[in-house]
Length: 182
Image (cartoon, rainbow, N blue to C red; front, side, top):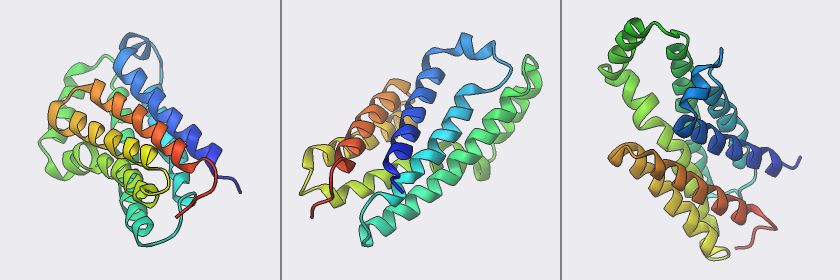
């Protein structure tokens, strides 16, 4: 089976989800379901098809474990965000639950702060397989992953997250087009 179209679709859905989260707040508030987090969930699941595209080896084994850990975190985060969305206009109760989650390191750290970063770090780790044969795309993937990490964990600036995601997407597509060469 050719997994590339599924993986590319998944990464495109991840970019679309982040675009909606960044710029479409009013549009999303008018919907009866949490479109952005559904796209994030589906994008993560489809993008996990990259696990079947990359060559096998020690680097890929480590990258696969990181990617799967991150995927579990993305699924958990999307589920909890959908729960928060379900409160609708009941801001008092939603804020109480959000405050509880933020004050619970066993929830906040693995599902909102550190966990999702494993998904992108895992995909970036795969790029070390291509550092000699496709260095530009491998470096784009690594820089994109670092930009996303900076945006999520340090600056809180969503533009870094989106920019990093786009760079990473370009790098992943460039690396996986054609045949793998050592």
